[in-house]
Image 1 (spheres, rainbow, N blue to C red):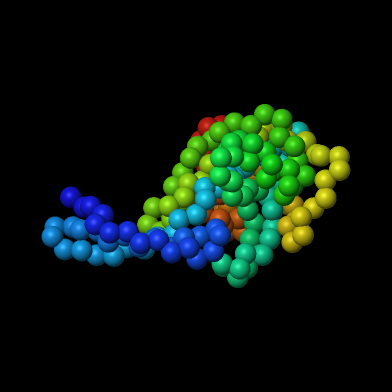
Image 2 (cartoon, one colour):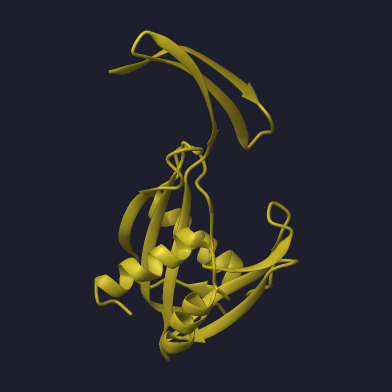
Length: 173
């Protein structure tokens, strides 16, 4: 049986804390490291004409422009569904009519302590006065193109591809 015998935390930024946990296993100890950060929400939305909005933006962590579902960090005390609706509107200019939870997933059990809270919106409609965020481009995909982009690696954010898969399993897209 394993147990934590010591834990140290060091804030790296307002968003990330490095956590070191010393674990005892069978009489010996070993240090493991992870990052603690806020949970985040991700939204798989459909417009009235059946298109799915993705956002294209530069991500310094992987030094490339990525294609992702809209989403963002959950503020302390914020309702996750409200956060999802806010992020959808901010990043894509779409307003969520109904919002349905798809599931809560561990982002990376070996390195990250946060969760991803996924939501589905079946009836996203344009906001009349939306102004795009700097550095974020909205790209609309039909269902077939979205699945093809996931299959060929154009859309390669693992958790977001998993969310599309989960929605597919639930016959939502």
